[in-house]
Image (cartoon, rainbow over all chains, first blue to last red; front, side, top):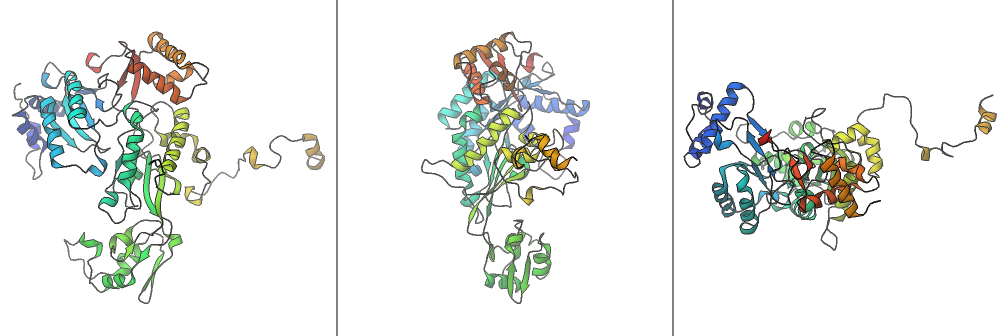
Length: 428
Length: 77
C-alpha cells in the first residue's frame, strides 16, 4: 500500500503533545494498511466529512454484539481500510490486568488486525480498531480459547459493565464494586451478547459519591456508594490539618503554594448545604443535611471518613445528547444494601434492574434510552412502576400547575359515585 | 403467551421473510403474539439467529433482525 501525502495531518505532529499521527506512521511500517487510515483521514479533513460508514451483519456466530462493522466509502482509493471493523473486549473489573495479558492481546491483534487499539472505550472496553470480516471468527476463537477473554457489548444490548477501583485500592468504597460488577456481568451474559432492549443499556458502579466512573452522567443504571449514618470524625486529625501537620487533599494540589490551610475558607464555607461548623476546637456536622458531595472528606481524608452503615444509591437514566440534550441520572432508590445472598447473587439489585427492564422493554420506543422514556412518561409514573414513594429529593422544582390529578385509589369511594346522591347535598 | 414457542418463532420468521421491512427491531415482533412478554419474543428471535435462520444487523448502537439474506451490509449499500 502506498504512502499518501498528508500535509494537514502532519500539522498535528508539530505540537508538544504525543500525536496519534506519529503513532500511525510508526505502525504503518509493520501494518501498511495504516497508511490508508492516514490517507482517508487526510481526505476527510479536506472534504470536511467522514469517509467511514458503519453497520452491518458482521459479528461472530451466536453473538449480537461486541463487533461494530465499519467500512470505507472510498475503498478503491484506500483498499487497506475497505473493511475496518471494531472489536470490543470486555475489560476486567476496574481494569486490573497483568502486562502479560495486555501483551497477549496486542500480539493477537497484530496477527488479526491493524494493531491499533483504543485504551479504553467510553464504556471501559479494550477497543481493537480495524480488522476484516474473514478475520473475525479466528480472532474470536483465539481470544476465547487461548486468552480466556470475551467480547464486550454493543448495539441494543447490555453494554460492558464498568466499575471504579472500589475497595481494592480505595478507602472510601462503600460496597465492593468489583464483586458487584463481575457478578452482574456473569449473571447477564445473555443480555451482554445478544440484543434484548429497545436501545443500549449501561451499568456503572462507583464505590462512593466521588463517582470516579462518572456513573451518574454516563449510565442508565448507576450504583453509587453512600452511607446512611454520620460521617466519622477524628477530631485530633482535624486539629492536625488546622495546625499544618497534614497536607490537605492528600497532597493532590501541592504543586503550588496555596498558603496556610484555612478550614473555614477551604471546607466549612464550601459545604453546599452549609451543614458544617466549628464549636471551639470541635468540628460539627449536621449529617441530616449532608448531600454527600464528598468535598470535606476529600480535603481532610485523615480526619473524615464515610459513615459505617454503608450501601448504595441507585440513579437511573443518564445519557449523552443524541435526543433532548445530555441528562444526568435521576435518584430512584435512595439507599440499598449491596450484599450477596446465600446463592452468591446480589438479589436486591437484580430485582431493581429487572423491574426497570420489564417496564422499559414494554413501554420504551425503538432507539429510546430509559432516561428518555422516563422523561416522556414522567417521573411519577416511573416511581410508581418502581414502587418507590416519592421523596422531596425527587421534586425538581415546586409545581406551577395548580391542579392536582388524583389517582382513583387515592379518593375515598373511588371515581364511581352516586351522582344523584351527591347532588342532593352539593348541587342545589 | 397465546402461541407456543415454536409457533411464535414461526410467526417471527414469517414476518422477517415476507414483511415489507427487511430489517426489524425486536419490538416489531411483539405483534406476532400480543400476549407474549418482551423477553419471550426476544428469546424466540435470538433462537432463530442461533439456528441460522435470521441475522443480527447492528449499526453499532442499535441492533435489528433480518431474515437470512435480507439484510445488507453497509459495504454493499
